[in-house]
Image (tube, rainbow, N blue to C red; front, side, top):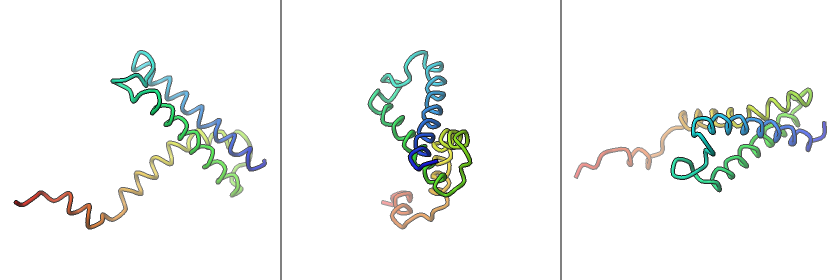
Length: 112
């Protein structure tokens, strides 16, 4: 596959993931899940969808360029899983990073 094909399959996989998330959220909210005051609003929701799709495209592009993607189905699956995996990895990374001196000072109660 060419590099842009990896990106398109990743984009498609991430879009499928977002559609499934939307369907679940719409059932819970009994309507469009982005409606304020319960939801974030249409603009914020659109940006989140766009960012998830970009994450899927970039991750599949990187994995594909590394030679780990055998075919389009694998690329589609990686694209669908990429936003979830990147989110979990980022949470893990933040949890294991040592706290800076500023963060420790902010957590201490004020003694005065």
